[in-house]
Length: 283
Image (cartoon, rainbow, N blue to C red; front, side, top):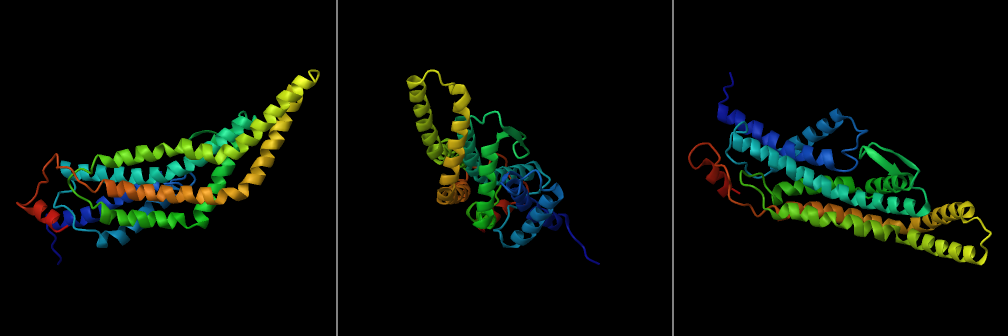
């Protein structure tokens, strides 16, 4: 008969539960994996499979009871790390969607909005079109596999520990979040520039021939020029989108590296005397 002590059982539970919480956080927040159309059972099954693969190769875990207060704090911290890594990748898609929003408003398609199941809000037609292009590029570049590779590397650069992660990790997400506006404006700049020239030309035409109904001809002209500008600029957006996706993955890696400088533990880890120190020394 096999006899298991409570310490061995807690060790097995922690070895699977703590990595699983980080993986679940990334799966829930990352684009494509966290899409609302993906069933929850599929997300959980994928997370468990990844946890079973990654758990045997991660560094030594702290000697902490997973059901104690310190163990629950580790669980929450790992979930936040995974959410931060997935959100860093989501920011790249948000920048592309912002470019579509700017283009739609400039073209006069602000009224053509649809329900977006990803954000549970309304999104313009051009924004959803560019989001689909970014999703196909995400799959074509195997960026989803690279993101999972960055997740596996994070267990080495930011091991599971009872001490809180460095405060610089949240700042990495905040600094990367500012790229939404810069990258979105850069991607939409060709379309906005073409429509600006069109609006200036319509203004000059209205001054030269006041009898023309600018409201009657302005909208179809702006819409046609906008669609033409998108069709011309679309083949040249592959490198900017690829660069933006690579920057999103690199931001996820920076989050793990910046959080590696641990701060002193707020709550001591219960367990045998010297158990936690020995586990940290083993790192």
